[in-house]
Structure formats: C-alpha cells, structure tokens
Image 1 (cartoon, rainbow, N blue to C red):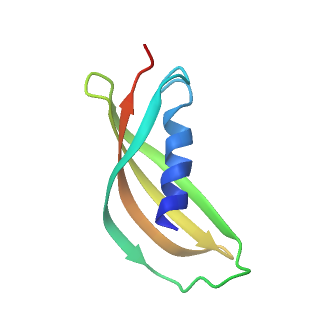
Image 2: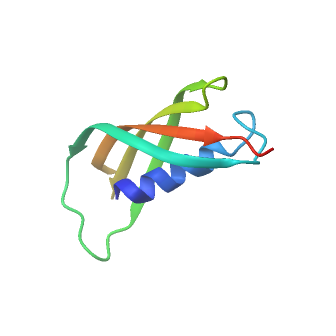
Length: 87
C-alpha cells in the first residue's frame, strides 16, 4: 500500500502548479506510518495524497497520505519525494 501511495504522490508531483510535468520524481522516504485496518485481496483501496510542502530550489516535496477501504482509514503516513527537473 505504501508503494501505491508513493506512486500517486509522484503523479501529484508532476502536475501543475507544482512542476511542469517534465522531469522525474523519486520516493525518498516515509515517516509516521500508522496501519489502521487489515486490507485483504478484493478490497477497494482509495488513496488520497496532499502536498504539504515543496521546496523547488532543493527539489524536495512533502506529502501526507491516507488510504481508505469502505470509507475507513486503512493506512496513513508522511511521505518525502525528490524531484529532478528535465533539462
């Protein structure tokens, strides 16, 4: 689930107004992860990522993320991403 949430966060990083859609993002870390609910095969996971900070000069973005199953939080955490602009 963390990897899936990181991929959603990367898509957010490549959207305007954060970036121009060019370049690459790298999943740099995760903190404060809390597992709230068991997720089993067949469950539908709805992921939500919110950009909380972006330092364009350093190419570092911070996000908080939550994943839900049937409207109940299954996992949540804070994510860090590194961004490399295309040249």
